[in-house]
Image (tube, protein in one colour):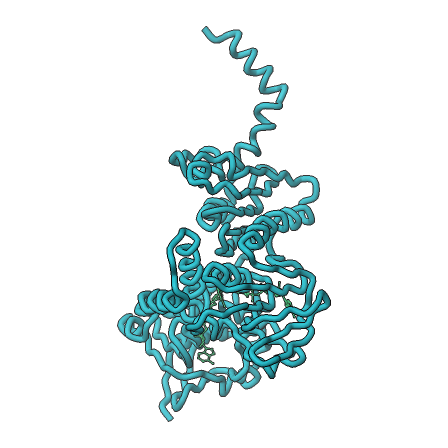
Length: 460
Ligand SMILES: Cc1cc2nc3c(=O)[nH]c(=O)nc-3n(C[C@H](O)[C@H](O)[C@H](O)COP(=O)(O)OP(=O)(O)OC[C@H]3O[C@@H](n4cnc5c(N)ncnc54)[C@H](O)[C@@H]3O)c2cc1C
Ligand SMILES: NC(=O)c1ccc[n+]([C@@H]2O[C@H](COP(=O)([O-])OP(=O)(O)OC[C@H]3O[C@@H](n4cnc5c(N)ncnc54)[C@H](O)[C@@H]3O)[C@@H](O)[C@H]2O)c1
């Protein structure tokens, strides 16, 4: 058995773990990184990157090009291979990180074992991510169940893909597969894209339905049966039969196998129990980041967590995570993006102090020029400051950046309206929403009218 003493031991080489490793080592810490499977984690290998690459192949088909299903998978593999070096062992060892390609598990409150190495560290970071949740639906063991870990490997085009779960994974995969020539049915027990503003989500769902995707809402998957090559999912709304099945009903955090109990680390169904510094509530030398930290599950959140932990674990600064400024985007066409509170959430928190400013993509010259006018923005404003923004439409994921910046920095609506943007851009829709907020104050105010008349009388 080899023993290593280090400042920081990071368990998991995905979005969160790699961000901390790169930051910490370049700031002078002694860092050990453990990765039991693929460097880059879910995002690079089975998540964001392959899903966006497949969606982009779907867009090419939509634009009139012919894309063979197998060739689309080659593109997915190429994209991963292009990004891979950034997350590679070579790059991290080059930075000075000691990378051990083994799964780690705690053997005491201060030690982790990985293969035949025991690592004793001043601080540990659990960055083990999450995996697909496969619920014990009756009959599930009799069929091949695809998840995000296997769907990207399919080379032959599924005739009819059944997707259980209408969250971001389900809806992105539905559109990509539909555009690549599959029949697709989504089975959702509640509302599809239910974490987003329902008015804006319904615009996406309408578009997906127009493209031929069947979306059955309020239909829980109750049992599954196989009949030769066919798979039938029984729901309260009837039986649905297809050729392939993708499970996309949420995530299960990766805590099994870590022997957290041996280190006195409390955890639950959502992950490691942490305070707002991302520190384990029961073992103060341990932090958790990313999907396993029990909050929002996005790559950029794991990256944000990395900054919080680096400030705390390396510099001893009182660094705390916030969540009100975290954006997300679902990369369907049209895109659906959110930051801060939705209208319903803002109404609950702020009551009649809330003003909702809206603008339509149809009123934007760039959208008209490109014939991409389906879209809308809603900005939730309280006392002159945005507390949330929801956008559906082309480039919504890019446009949300302005509101993410405004909310993260507590800027006023005037910061948006004072900004000059190039014409014609989609981002001008953001300014139009700010204009919609100020218009009634400016154009429907008697005081403003009186002041203007008075000034005009005295001006030479
Ligand atoms: C299909 C899909 C699409 C997605 N699309 C997006 C998107 O567009 N945008 C976005 O922001 N997010 C997206 N996500 C979410 C995003 O992938 C995750 O939020 C992100 O990867 C979480 O990072 P992480 O560091 O917590 O975990 P991961 O990146 O999963 O990394 C965890 C790593 O820990 C390793 N590990 C686990 N246990 C151990 C152990 N005991 N010892 C050593 N290593 C271990 C794993 O092998 C893995 O490499 C998507 C997810 C999926 C599934
Ligand atoms: N673009 C992005 O940023 C992106 C893309 C994909 C995934 N992600 C991340 O990954 C996470 C997981 O995505 P997801 O889509 O698997 O999870 P999710 O929790 O967001 O959605 C799962 C959906 O499945 C439904 N469901 C659950 N059990 C069901 C059943 N038995 N029958 C029918 N429907 C059922 C739920 O009501 C829910 O709508 C997301 O929350 C997000 O954090 C992000």
